[in-house]
Structure formats: structure tokens, C-alpha cells
Length: 111
Length: 115
Image (cartoon, rainbow over all chains, first blue to last red; front, top):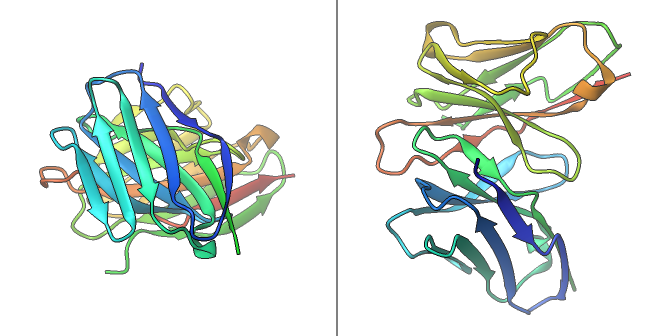
């Protein structure tokens, strides 16, 4: 059974610093790895999707890497802003599209 | 299309009552998923449909829970005889099978509080 772990559980940084969020998974037979953002009391917003054959994906200030062999993905957010404060979730997708989530990393960016 | 839509956004019910939630997926998406999220945890898979067929149900989905997706369009999730432990955020997601990227898109969720 796939297990996904996110470390750290919480992170607080001053505005302008780069953020590094870690995600590990136990079963390397994943279809995709997807990163989401969740604001308090809201649903999930998809940030980046990395196919299993890819090593990384980039969107604006966001970059996500994937190393299937070691069971790790990392989300980098450059030059953090207070608006980046949220919970970030990673999820491993199987071939049926089912997502196995980590518990998330709660990020606070202070002005 | 404005994305995945869930109704209601919030539901407060008394223990023992039945509740029903609705999810309208992105129109061309043939896969629809239900997840449940409790405070401080990531969402947990409940069930999913491909078109109108329910293909898998998690062990989390007790016999008090039932889900339907008539005609492969919207879906409903019903909880009978609600218990306080059912209090959670219920999330719906949809995706397109066969697309190059099986990217899942989520709705805003339905927050259930059982009192």
C-alpha cells in the first residue's frame, strides 16, 4: 500500500526566502505526482503535475522535482510572498487516477 | 466550464439524520472521485466512478454511505444515520481518462458537521 509522507509538517519563513517542501512515497510504481495548495476551509488547487517519466515541472515561481528511484519529490517556491501562506499537499497517483495524499505542510510567510 | 462544483458548501445536521451532497464535475471528464478530509490530515479516497460505473469503494465507505453517478454526469454522496465521526470535509474531484495527463481537479468541498 502506497504511503506518502511530507516533511516538515509546518514551516514559517520571512517574505523573500525560498521555500523547500519535501514529499516521499513508498511505492515507486506511481503514474503521476501532483502538488496541491489548500487554503483554510477550501478545496484543493492543483499546482503542478509531474508524470512518472519526467524529472521536473516548472510554473512561474514554482518548481517540482521527482526522483522515482528514491521515492521523493520536492516543491520549490522561489521568493516567497505572504500570499503563499497555505497548506501544500503532495499526492501520488496510480494508473486509475486515485490519489494517495500526504498530510501536508502548513506554510506561513511573514511580511 | 467553471470547474468542479460541489453543493452545499456547508451542512450542519443532527446525529441520526441523512444527508446528501452533490458534485458536478468538469463536463468532459469521465472519472469522478470522492475523498474525505479531517482536520490536519490529507484527503482519503472513498470511491470513484468511470462514467456511470462505480469501480472501487474504500473500506472507509461503510454501508451507511452510498454514491451514485447517474448517466455519468453529476454524482451524489449520501450518508445515512449520520454519526459525529462523519464530521469532515467531503471533496469531489474529476479527471479525464486517456488524456496525456491524468490531472485531478477538485471542487471547493462540502463541510459536514454532525451535532
